[in-house]
Length: 474
Ligand code: CTP
Image (cartoon, rainbow, N blue to C red; front, side, top):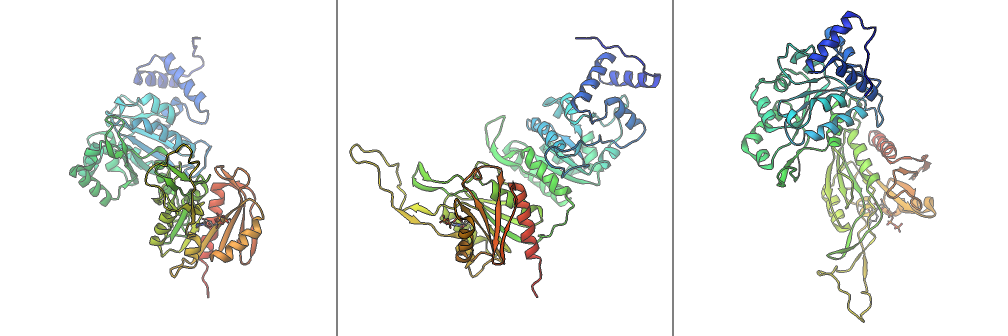
Protein backbone atom coordinates (compact mmCIF):
# COMPACT_ATOMS: atom_id res chain seq x y z
CA UNK A 1 0.00 0.00 0.00
CA UNK A 2 1.42 3.42 -0.94
CA UNK A 3 2.34 5.59 2.01
CA UNK A 4 0.67 8.94 2.50
CA UNK A 5 2.63 12.15 3.13
CA UNK A 6 0.72 14.89 4.84
CA UNK A 7 1.85 18.35 3.71
CA UNK A 8 0.56 21.90 3.91
CA UNK A 9 -1.67 21.39 6.93
CA UNK A 10 -1.84 24.33 9.27
CA UNK A 11 -1.57 23.79 13.01
CA UNK A 12 -5.28 23.90 13.59
CA UNK A 13 -5.97 21.26 10.90
CA UNK A 14 -3.15 19.10 12.28
CA UNK A 15 -4.61 19.35 15.76
CA UNK A 16 -8.06 18.39 14.45
CA UNK A 17 -6.57 15.42 12.64
CA UNK A 18 -4.64 14.34 15.72
CA UNK A 19 -7.78 14.48 17.89
CA UNK A 20 -9.88 12.65 15.31
CA UNK A 21 -7.26 9.91 15.00
CA UNK A 22 -6.95 9.58 18.77
CA UNK A 23 -10.72 9.42 19.22
CA UNK A 24 -10.90 6.62 16.65
CA UNK A 25 -7.85 4.78 17.97
CA UNK A 26 -6.07 5.24 14.66
CA UNK A 27 -2.72 6.54 13.57
CA UNK A 28 -2.89 9.87 11.78
CA UNK A 29 -2.07 8.13 8.50
CA UNK A 30 -4.92 5.62 9.01
CA UNK A 31 -7.28 8.46 9.79
CA UNK A 32 -6.34 10.23 6.56
CA UNK A 33 -6.95 7.00 4.62
CA UNK A 34 -10.43 6.67 6.15
CA UNK A 35 -11.19 10.28 5.31
CA UNK A 36 -10.03 9.84 1.73
CA UNK A 37 -12.08 6.65 1.40
CA UNK A 38 -15.15 8.46 2.74
CA UNK A 39 -14.72 11.31 0.30
CA UNK A 40 -14.27 8.84 -2.56
CA UNK A 41 -17.46 7.02 -1.53
CA UNK A 42 -19.40 10.24 -1.78
CA UNK A 43 -17.80 13.40 -2.96
CA UNK A 44 -20.90 15.37 -1.96
CA UNK A 45 -20.48 14.64 1.71
CA UNK A 46 -18.27 16.61 4.06
CA UNK A 47 -15.09 14.89 5.19
CA UNK A 48 -14.76 14.02 8.85
CA UNK A 49 -12.50 17.03 9.30
CA UNK A 50 -15.08 19.38 7.77
CA UNK A 51 -17.70 17.75 9.89
CA UNK A 52 -15.64 18.18 13.03
CA UNK A 53 -15.21 21.82 12.21
CA UNK A 54 -18.97 22.16 11.75
CA UNK A 55 -19.51 20.69 15.18
CA UNK A 56 -16.92 22.97 16.75
CA UNK A 57 -18.54 25.98 15.12
CA UNK A 58 -22.07 24.83 15.90
CA UNK A 59 -23.02 24.62 12.23
CA UNK A 60 -25.95 22.35 11.32
CA UNK A 61 -25.18 18.77 12.27
CA UNK A 62 -26.56 16.93 9.29
CA UNK A 63 -24.44 16.41 6.20
CA UNK A 64 -25.75 17.86 2.97
CA UNK A 65 -28.16 15.39 1.43
CA UNK A 66 -27.17 14.03 -1.94
CA UNK A 67 -29.29 14.24 -5.02
CA UNK A 68 -31.72 11.40 -5.15
CA UNK A 69 -31.45 8.47 -7.49
CA UNK A 70 -34.95 7.18 -6.73
CA UNK A 71 -37.21 10.10 -5.89
CA UNK A 72 -36.62 13.27 -3.99
CA UNK A 73 -39.53 12.88 -1.56
CA UNK A 74 -37.13 13.11 1.37
CA UNK A 75 -34.92 15.71 -0.24
CA UNK A 76 -33.43 17.97 2.41
CA UNK A 77 -35.00 16.01 5.29
CA UNK A 78 -32.84 15.12 8.26
CA UNK A 79 -33.46 11.72 9.80
CA UNK A 80 -31.93 10.68 13.09
CA UNK A 81 -31.83 6.89 13.09
CA UNK A 82 -31.48 5.14 16.43
CA UNK A 83 -30.24 1.58 15.97
CA UNK A 84 -31.17 -0.74 18.82
CA UNK A 85 -29.50 -4.03 19.63
CA UNK A 86 -31.09 -6.86 17.71
CA UNK A 87 -30.33 -9.16 14.83
CA UNK A 88 -32.49 -6.91 12.62
CA UNK A 89 -29.84 -4.18 13.00
CA UNK A 90 -28.30 -5.46 9.76
CA UNK A 91 -31.42 -4.25 7.93
CA UNK A 92 -30.76 -0.75 9.24
CA UNK A 93 -27.76 -0.56 6.93
CA UNK A 94 -30.09 -1.00 3.97
CA UNK A 95 -32.53 1.47 5.53
CA UNK A 96 -29.78 4.12 5.57
CA UNK A 97 -29.14 3.53 1.87
CA UNK A 98 -32.84 3.75 1.02
CA UNK A 99 -33.26 7.00 2.95
CA UNK A 100 -30.21 8.58 1.34
CA UNK A 101 -31.32 7.43 -2.13
CA UNK A 102 -34.42 9.53 -1.56
CA UNK A 103 -32.45 12.63 -0.68
CA UNK A 104 -32.45 12.45 3.14
CA UNK A 105 -29.39 13.07 5.25
CA UNK A 106 -29.03 10.50 8.00
CA UNK A 107 -27.36 10.63 11.39
CA UNK A 108 -27.13 7.58 13.60
CA UNK A 109 -27.16 6.87 17.28
CA UNK A 110 -26.23 3.30 18.17
CA UNK A 111 -26.93 1.68 21.51
CA UNK A 112 -24.21 -0.40 23.13
CA UNK A 113 -26.09 -3.60 22.21
CA UNK A 114 -26.49 -2.46 18.59
CA UNK A 115 -22.70 -2.38 18.28
CA UNK A 116 -22.67 -6.13 18.94
CA UNK A 117 -24.56 -6.63 15.68
CA UNK A 118 -23.23 -3.93 13.32
CA UNK A 119 -20.19 -1.73 13.70
CA UNK A 120 -20.17 2.06 13.95
CA UNK A 121 -17.62 1.92 11.12
CA UNK A 122 -20.11 0.45 8.62
CA UNK A 123 -22.87 2.75 9.81
CA UNK A 124 -20.52 5.73 9.57
CA UNK A 125 -19.44 4.74 6.06
CA UNK A 126 -23.04 4.48 4.87
CA UNK A 127 -24.21 7.72 6.48
CA UNK A 128 -20.92 9.45 5.62
CA UNK A 129 -21.01 11.03 9.03
CA UNK A 130 -20.04 10.47 12.64
CA UNK A 131 -21.95 7.84 14.59
CA UNK A 132 -23.04 8.76 18.11
CA UNK A 133 -22.74 6.12 20.79
CA UNK A 134 -22.20 7.70 24.21
CA UNK A 135 -24.23 10.02 26.37
CA UNK A 136 -21.17 11.56 27.97
CA UNK A 137 -17.99 11.40 25.97
CA UNK A 138 -15.94 14.48 26.62
CA UNK A 139 -13.01 12.86 24.81
CA UNK A 140 -14.99 12.97 21.63
CA UNK A 141 -15.11 16.27 19.81
CA UNK A 142 -18.37 15.08 18.29
CA UNK A 143 -20.07 15.15 21.68
CA UNK A 144 -22.83 17.63 20.85
CA UNK A 145 -25.31 16.68 23.52
CA UNK A 146 -28.55 14.79 23.27
CA UNK A 147 -30.71 17.90 23.15
CA UNK A 148 -29.10 19.21 20.00
CA UNK A 149 -29.07 15.77 18.40
CA UNK A 150 -32.75 15.27 19.08
CA UNK A 151 -33.84 18.72 17.92
CA UNK A 152 -31.80 19.02 14.75
CA UNK A 153 -33.72 16.29 13.00
CA UNK A 154 -37.03 16.34 11.16
CA UNK A 155 -37.89 12.87 12.42
CA UNK A 156 -36.40 10.22 14.67
CA UNK A 157 -36.67 6.62 13.52
CA UNK A 158 -35.90 3.75 15.87
CA UNK A 159 -35.02 0.63 13.90
CA UNK A 160 -34.80 -1.94 15.27
CA UNK A 161 -36.82 -0.80 18.28
CA UNK A 162 -36.09 -3.42 20.92
CA UNK A 163 -38.36 -4.30 23.85
CA UNK A 164 -35.80 -2.56 26.04
CA UNK A 165 -35.85 0.73 24.09
CA UNK A 166 -39.65 0.71 24.06
CA UNK A 167 -39.73 0.08 27.81
CA UNK A 168 -37.21 2.85 28.47
CA UNK A 169 -39.18 5.47 26.57
CA UNK A 170 -42.55 4.29 27.92
CA UNK A 171 -41.12 4.61 31.43
CA UNK A 172 -39.38 7.94 30.77
CA UNK A 173 -35.83 6.67 31.34
CA UNK A 174 -32.80 8.48 29.95
CA UNK A 175 -29.93 6.26 30.99
CA UNK A 176 -28.10 6.17 27.67
CA UNK A 177 -27.77 8.37 24.60
CA UNK A 178 -30.61 6.68 22.65
CA UNK A 179 -33.19 6.99 25.43
CA UNK A 180 -32.04 10.50 26.37
CA UNK A 181 -32.45 11.65 22.76
CA UNK A 182 -35.92 10.10 22.58
CA UNK A 183 -36.99 11.76 25.80
CA UNK A 184 -35.60 15.15 24.78
CA UNK A 185 -37.10 15.37 21.33
CA UNK A 186 -39.98 17.49 20.14
CA UNK A 187 -40.08 15.74 16.74
CA UNK A 188 -42.09 12.79 15.41
CA UNK A 189 -40.78 9.43 16.57
CA UNK A 190 -41.32 6.32 14.42
CA UNK A 191 -40.53 2.94 15.92
CA UNK A 192 -39.95 -0.26 13.91
CA UNK A 193 -40.08 -2.97 16.59
CA UNK A 194 -38.13 -6.19 16.18
CA UNK A 195 -38.05 -8.94 18.75
CA UNK A 196 -38.94 -12.53 19.48
CA UNK A 197 -42.74 -13.14 19.07
CA UNK A 198 -43.11 -14.02 22.76
CA UNK A 199 -41.36 -10.83 23.79
CA UNK A 200 -43.62 -8.84 21.47
CA UNK A 201 -46.82 -10.41 22.80
CA UNK A 202 -45.73 -10.19 26.43
CA UNK A 203 -48.22 -8.01 28.38
CA UNK A 204 -45.37 -5.71 29.45
CA UNK A 205 -44.37 -4.96 25.82
CA UNK A 206 -47.99 -4.52 24.78
CA UNK A 207 -48.54 -2.18 27.75
CA UNK A 208 -45.49 -0.18 26.69
CA UNK A 209 -46.66 -0.05 23.09
CA UNK A 210 -50.09 1.23 24.15
CA UNK A 211 -48.45 3.87 26.36
CA UNK A 212 -46.10 4.96 23.58
CA UNK A 213 -49.00 5.21 21.12
CA UNK A 214 -50.85 7.36 23.65
CA UNK A 215 -47.76 9.56 23.90
CA UNK A 216 -47.79 10.05 20.12
CA UNK A 217 -45.09 7.59 19.10
CA UNK A 218 -45.82 6.05 15.69
CA UNK A 219 -45.20 2.44 14.70
CA UNK A 220 -44.42 0.55 11.52
CA UNK A 221 -44.61 -3.25 11.83
CA UNK A 222 -43.66 -5.62 13.25
CA UNK A 223 -44.45 -8.09 10.51
CA UNK A 224 -45.26 -11.73 11.02
CA UNK A 225 -42.91 -14.40 9.83
CA UNK A 226 -40.05 -16.65 10.74
CA UNK A 227 -37.51 -15.26 13.22
CA UNK A 228 -33.94 -15.16 11.90
CA UNK A 229 -32.38 -16.45 15.12
CA UNK A 230 -34.82 -19.11 16.36
CA UNK A 231 -36.98 -20.05 13.40
CA UNK A 232 -40.06 -19.28 15.56
CA UNK A 233 -43.13 -18.01 13.73
CA UNK A 234 -45.19 -14.99 14.72
CA UNK A 235 -45.22 -11.19 14.90
CA UNK A 236 -41.84 -9.68 15.67
CA UNK A 237 -39.95 -9.30 12.40
CA UNK A 238 -38.84 -5.76 11.75
CA UNK A 239 -40.67 -4.05 8.87
CA UNK A 240 -38.63 -4.11 5.66
CA UNK A 241 -36.41 -1.07 4.96
CA UNK A 242 -38.68 0.01 2.08
CA UNK A 243 -41.75 -0.14 4.34
CA UNK A 244 -40.00 1.99 6.94
CA UNK A 245 -38.88 4.42 4.24
CA UNK A 246 -42.45 4.68 2.92
CA UNK A 247 -43.76 5.31 6.45
CA UNK A 248 -41.18 8.08 6.93
CA UNK A 249 -42.08 9.60 3.57
CA UNK A 250 -45.72 9.64 4.57
CA UNK A 251 -45.01 11.24 7.94
CA UNK A 252 -42.86 13.97 6.42
CA UNK A 253 -45.05 14.54 3.41
CA UNK A 254 -46.49 18.02 3.63
CA UNK A 255 -48.19 17.98 0.25
CA UNK A 256 -51.93 18.71 0.23
CA UNK A 257 -54.13 15.68 0.89
CA UNK A 258 -57.12 16.24 -1.39
CA UNK A 259 -58.57 12.79 -0.64
CA UNK A 260 -58.35 12.93 3.16
CA UNK A 261 -61.38 11.17 4.61
CA UNK A 262 -62.24 9.44 1.30
CA UNK A 263 -62.61 5.68 0.97
CA UNK A 264 -61.22 4.10 -2.18
CA UNK A 265 -61.35 0.47 -3.31
CA UNK A 266 -58.78 -0.87 -5.77
CA UNK A 267 -58.61 -4.38 -7.25
CA UNK A 268 -55.28 -5.65 -8.52
CA UNK A 269 -53.40 -8.68 -9.83
CA UNK A 270 -54.75 -11.81 -11.49
CA UNK A 271 -57.15 -14.33 -10.03
CA UNK A 272 -56.35 -18.02 -9.76
CA UNK A 273 -59.20 -20.35 -10.63
CA UNK A 274 -58.52 -23.85 -9.33
CA UNK A 275 -58.76 -26.94 -11.52
CA UNK A 276 -57.77 -29.23 -8.66
CA UNK A 277 -55.75 -28.66 -5.45
CA UNK A 278 -52.49 -28.21 -7.39
CA UNK A 279 -53.50 -26.70 -10.73
CA UNK A 280 -55.17 -23.44 -11.60
CA UNK A 281 -56.06 -21.10 -14.48
CA UNK A 282 -54.30 -17.72 -14.31
CA UNK A 283 -52.99 -14.86 -16.43
CA UNK A 284 -49.84 -12.76 -16.70
CA UNK A 285 -50.96 -9.80 -14.55
CA UNK A 286 -48.19 -8.80 -12.09
CA UNK A 287 -50.29 -6.42 -9.98
CA UNK A 288 -47.75 -3.62 -10.52
CA UNK A 289 -50.24 -1.14 -12.00
CA UNK A 290 -53.00 -1.87 -9.46
CA UNK A 291 -50.65 -1.71 -6.48
CA UNK A 292 -49.15 1.55 -7.76
CA UNK A 293 -52.65 3.00 -8.06
CA UNK A 294 -53.49 1.98 -4.49
CA UNK A 295 -50.29 3.65 -3.25
CA UNK A 296 -50.99 6.80 -5.29
CA UNK A 297 -54.46 7.19 -3.72
CA UNK A 298 -52.98 6.64 -0.26
CA UNK A 299 -50.43 9.38 -0.87
CA UNK A 300 -53.34 11.78 -1.56
CA UNK A 301 -54.66 10.99 1.91
CA UNK A 302 -57.40 8.46 1.03
CA UNK A 303 -58.08 5.33 3.07
CA UNK A 304 -57.41 2.71 0.43
CA UNK A 305 -58.64 -0.87 0.45
CA UNK A 306 -56.69 -2.99 -1.97
CA UNK A 307 -58.23 -6.33 -2.91
CA UNK A 308 -55.39 -8.25 -4.47
CA UNK A 309 -55.18 -11.55 -6.28
CA UNK A 310 -52.00 -13.64 -5.91
CA UNK A 311 -48.96 -11.50 -6.82
CA UNK A 312 -45.26 -11.66 -6.12
CA UNK A 313 -44.90 -8.00 -5.08
CA UNK A 314 -45.24 -6.64 -1.51
CA UNK A 315 -48.38 -4.97 -0.16
CA UNK A 316 -48.10 -1.21 -0.65
CA UNK A 317 -47.35 0.70 2.56
CA UNK A 318 -50.19 2.72 4.04
CA UNK A 319 -52.89 0.68 2.30
CA UNK A 320 -55.22 -1.95 3.81
CA UNK A 321 -54.73 -5.05 1.66
CA UNK A 322 -57.07 -8.03 1.45
CA UNK A 323 -55.64 -11.10 -0.26
CA UNK A 324 -57.88 -13.32 -2.36
CA UNK A 325 -57.37 -16.12 -4.87
CA UNK A 326 -60.56 -16.52 -6.91
CA UNK A 327 -62.84 -14.08 -8.76
CA UNK A 328 -65.79 -14.94 -6.53
CA UNK A 329 -63.70 -14.19 -3.43
CA UNK A 330 -62.65 -10.89 -4.99
CA UNK A 331 -66.28 -9.98 -5.72
CA UNK A 332 -67.34 -10.82 -2.14
CA UNK A 333 -64.49 -8.79 -0.65
CA UNK A 334 -65.29 -5.76 -2.82
CA UNK A 335 -69.03 -5.88 -2.05
CA UNK A 336 -68.30 -6.06 1.66
CA UNK A 337 -66.19 -2.92 1.39
CA UNK A 338 -69.03 -0.84 -0.08
CA UNK A 339 -69.93 2.00 0.30
CA UNK A 340 -66.89 3.85 -1.02
CA UNK A 341 -66.22 7.17 -2.73
CA UNK A 342 -64.52 5.55 -5.71
CA UNK A 343 -63.60 2.08 -6.91
CA UNK A 344 -60.85 1.35 -9.41
CA UNK A 345 -60.90 -2.08 -11.05
CA UNK A 346 -57.41 -2.90 -12.23
CA UNK A 347 -57.42 -6.66 -11.58
CA UNK A 348 -57.19 -8.99 -14.55
CA UNK A 349 -60.04 -11.17 -13.33
CA UNK A 350 -60.32 -14.58 -14.97
CA UNK A 351 -63.46 -14.55 -17.08
CA UNK A 352 -64.12 -18.24 -16.50
CA UNK A 353 -63.59 -20.85 -13.85
CA UNK A 354 -63.86 -24.58 -14.06
CA UNK A 355 -67.21 -25.89 -12.98
CA UNK A 356 -66.66 -27.70 -9.68
CA UNK A 357 -62.88 -27.88 -9.14
CA UNK A 358 -61.75 -31.41 -8.25
CA UNK A 359 -61.10 -32.09 -4.53
CA UNK A 360 -58.19 -34.39 -5.34
CA UNK A 361 -55.40 -34.08 -7.85
CA UNK A 362 -56.65 -35.23 -11.26
CA UNK A 363 -54.53 -38.28 -12.24
CA UNK A 364 -53.45 -39.34 -15.68
CA UNK A 365 -55.16 -42.61 -16.44
CA UNK A 366 -53.70 -44.62 -19.32
CA UNK A 367 -56.10 -44.72 -22.25
CA UNK A 368 -58.51 -42.08 -20.81
CA UNK A 369 -56.89 -39.09 -22.58
CA UNK A 370 -56.87 -35.54 -21.18
CA UNK A 371 -59.69 -34.52 -18.81
CA UNK A 372 -62.49 -32.36 -20.17
CA UNK A 373 -62.72 -29.08 -18.25
CA UNK A 374 -66.16 -27.50 -18.28
CA UNK A 375 -65.93 -23.76 -17.82
CA UNK A 376 -68.53 -21.43 -16.30
CA UNK A 377 -68.50 -17.63 -16.34
CA UNK A 378 -67.14 -15.72 -13.37
CA UNK A 379 -69.00 -12.76 -11.90
CA UNK A 380 -68.04 -9.46 -13.53
CA UNK A 381 -66.99 -7.46 -10.49
CA UNK A 382 -66.77 -4.09 -12.24
CA UNK A 383 -70.23 -4.50 -13.81
CA UNK A 384 -71.68 -5.67 -10.46
CA UNK A 385 -70.38 -2.53 -8.70
CA UNK A 386 -71.12 -0.25 -11.67
CA UNK A 387 -74.82 -1.13 -11.34
CA UNK A 388 -74.88 -1.62 -7.57
CA UNK A 389 -77.44 0.01 -5.27
CA UNK A 390 -74.45 1.23 -3.21
CA UNK A 391 -72.49 2.30 -6.28
CA UNK A 392 -69.48 4.51 -5.45
CA UNK A 393 -69.64 8.04 -6.87
CA UNK A 394 -66.87 7.19 -9.30
CA UNK A 395 -66.30 3.83 -10.91
CA UNK A 396 -63.19 3.30 -13.02
CA UNK A 397 -62.40 0.19 -15.04
CA UNK A 398 -59.46 -0.92 -17.14
CA UNK A 399 -59.68 -2.46 -20.58
CA UNK A 400 -56.89 -4.82 -21.46
CA UNK A 401 -57.06 -5.16 -25.24
CA UNK A 402 -54.91 -6.57 -27.97
CA UNK A 403 -56.96 -5.03 -30.84
CA UNK A 404 -59.59 -2.29 -31.46
CA UNK A 405 -58.57 -0.75 -28.14
CA UNK A 406 -60.81 2.36 -28.28
CA UNK A 407 -63.88 0.66 -29.70
CA UNK A 408 -63.74 -2.10 -27.08
CA UNK A 409 -63.11 0.40 -24.27
CA UNK A 410 -66.16 2.46 -25.27
CA UNK A 411 -68.29 -0.67 -25.33
CA UNK A 412 -67.06 -1.66 -21.84
CA UNK A 413 -67.80 1.84 -20.48
CA UNK A 414 -71.47 1.50 -21.31
CA UNK A 415 -71.88 -2.20 -20.57
CA UNK A 416 -70.18 -2.12 -17.16
CA UNK A 417 -71.62 1.18 -15.88
CA UNK A 418 -68.20 2.84 -15.45
CA UNK A 419 -67.43 6.57 -15.44
CA UNK A 420 -63.98 6.02 -16.93
CA UNK A 421 -62.25 3.20 -18.70
CA UNK A 422 -58.47 3.20 -18.75
CA UNK A 423 -57.74 1.42 -21.99
CA UNK A 424 -54.40 -0.19 -22.62
CA UNK A 425 -52.97 -2.24 -25.40
CA UNK A 426 -51.56 -5.34 -23.72
CA UNK A 427 -50.26 -6.96 -26.88
CA UNK A 428 -46.66 -5.83 -26.02
CA UNK A 429 -44.80 -6.14 -22.71
CA UNK A 430 -47.26 -4.14 -20.56
CA UNK A 431 -48.22 -7.12 -18.42
CA UNK A 432 -45.37 -7.57 -15.96
CA UNK A 433 -43.47 -4.54 -17.32
CA UNK A 434 -42.89 -1.17 -15.63
CA UNK A 435 -44.31 1.11 -18.29
CA UNK A 436 -47.76 1.67 -19.67
CA UNK A 437 -49.47 3.66 -22.39
CA UNK A 438 -53.12 4.32 -21.72
CA UNK A 439 -56.11 6.19 -23.09
CA UNK A 440 -58.74 7.52 -20.70
CA UNK A 441 -62.18 6.94 -22.15
CA UNK A 442 -65.29 8.58 -20.74
CA UNK A 443 -68.68 9.69 -22.07
CA UNK A 444 -67.11 13.01 -23.00
CA UNK A 445 -64.42 11.49 -25.20
CA UNK A 446 -60.99 9.87 -25.16
CA UNK A 447 -57.74 11.35 -23.88
CA UNK A 448 -54.50 9.68 -24.88
CA UNK A 449 -51.66 9.79 -22.34
CA UNK A 450 -48.06 9.41 -23.50
CA UNK A 451 -46.13 6.30 -22.50
CA UNK A 452 -44.93 6.61 -18.90
CA UNK A 453 -43.98 4.56 -15.86
CA UNK A 454 -46.79 2.70 -14.10
CA UNK A 455 -46.20 4.87 -11.00
CA UNK A 456 -46.83 7.97 -13.04
CA UNK A 457 -49.96 6.56 -14.65
CA UNK A 458 -51.10 5.83 -11.10
CA UNK A 459 -50.33 9.34 -9.85
CA UNK A 460 -52.14 10.98 -12.78
CA UNK A 461 -55.15 8.73 -12.41
CA UNK A 462 -55.35 9.46 -8.67
CA UNK A 463 -55.18 13.20 -9.43
CA UNK A 464 -57.96 12.85 -12.00
CA UNK A 465 -60.22 10.97 -9.59
CA UNK A 466 -59.43 13.46 -6.78
CA UNK A 467 -60.37 16.34 -9.07
CA UNK A 468 -63.68 14.69 -10.03
CA UNK A 469 -64.56 13.75 -6.45
CA UNK A 470 -63.80 17.25 -5.23
CA UNK A 471 -65.83 18.97 -7.95
CA UNK A 472 -69.03 20.20 -6.37
CA UNK A 473 -71.98 19.35 -8.54
CA UNK A 474 -74.53 22.21 -8.27
N1 CTP B 1 -63.42 -7.13 -14.67
C1 CTP B 1 -64.02 -7.51 -13.50
N2 CTP B 1 -64.51 -8.76 -13.37
C2 CTP B 1 -64.42 -9.65 -14.36
C3 CTP B 1 -63.78 -9.28 -15.58
C4 CTP B 1 -63.29 -8.02 -15.69
O1 CTP B 1 -64.10 -6.69 -12.58
N3 CTP B 1 -64.90 -10.86 -14.21
C5 CTP B 1 -62.96 -5.77 -14.83
C6 CTP B 1 -61.46 -5.62 -14.93
O2 CTP B 1 -60.90 -5.38 -13.64
C7 CTP B 1 -61.33 -4.37 -15.81
C8 CTP B 1 -62.54 -4.44 -16.71
O3 CTP B 1 -63.47 -5.28 -16.03
O4 CTP B 1 -61.46 -3.19 -15.06
C9 CTP B 1 -62.29 -4.98 -18.07
O5 CTP B 1 -61.57 -6.19 -18.01
P1 CTP B 1 -61.09 -6.90 -19.33
O6 CTP B 1 -60.38 -8.15 -18.98
O7 CTP B 1 -60.41 -5.91 -20.21
O8 CTP B 1 -62.46 -7.18 -20.05
P2 CTP B 1 -63.50 -8.32 -19.89
O9 CTP B 1 -64.72 -7.77 -19.28
O10 CTP B 1 -62.92 -9.52 -19.24
O11 CTP B 1 -63.82 -8.61 -21.40
P3 CTP B 1 -62.91 -9.29 -22.53
O12 CTP B 1 -62.00 -10.26 -21.80
O13 CTP B 1 -63.88 -9.93 -23.41
O14 CTP B 1 -62.15 -8.18 -23.19
